[in-house]
Length: 254
Image 1 (cartoon, rainbow, N blue to C red):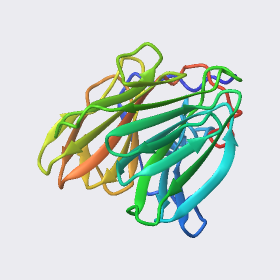
Image 2: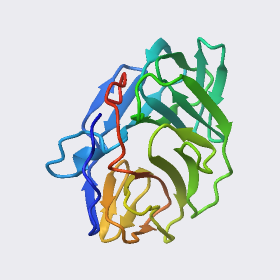
Image 3: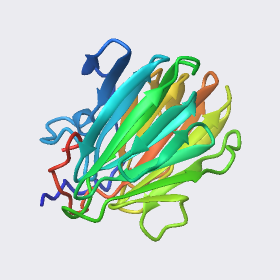
C-alpha cells in the first residue's frame, strides 16, 4: 500500500499539455494521460487512486482479442460511437453515449473489445482506478446513464455507496459536462479532496488558466474554481481523495 501526498490547503492549478505518451497499433491508438505528472516533483505518474486516463481510438472493423485485467477498475466512457464488449462470463455489451461500463477486474477478468466494419470511428476515454485492496471479487457493471443537461455536471461513477449510477472501489468521483461557448460552471470539488480536469473537446478557462483540446489540470485546495467555455466544449472531472489507500498491481493502471 502507498499513501499519496495530502491535499494542499491553498488553491493551486497545475496545468498539463497534451500527453506525448502514446501507442500506435494501426487501427487501435491510445494516448496516456498521467494526472500525477502535472504536479512538479510528484513521484507518482498517477494521483492517489486515479492511475491514468487513456484517450483511445478504434477504427471501424477493429478487434482487440480476449485478454485479462487484474487489480484495477477500468471505466469506458464513450461520448460518441460504440464500443462492443464480450467476456468469459458470457456478457455481450454495447457501450455508447447512453451507457457506461465499469469493469472491476479484481482477481482477474477476461474480455475483448471490438468495433464492426459499419460502426463509426470510435474515440473514448478509458479510465484506470487503483482499488483499495488486492484480489477483490471481479465484477462488471453496464448501466444506462442519465441524459446530459447542457452546462451541468453529470455524476457518473463514485465510490461504493454513493448516488452515482456506477461505482469504483476507491475514493474517486467522475463527472462530465457539455459546456456551451460563454457558459460558466463551478468545478466539482469535495472537502480535502483534489480535482483533475480533462478537456475532451473545446477550449475553456479554469480560474486564470486556459486549457484546450486534450489538455488537463490538477486543482488542489478547497476553494471554488470557475470554468468558462470560450467555445463549445466537452469536459470531464475527477474528484480524488489523495490520501486514500491504494494498490499498485494493476495490469495497466499501476
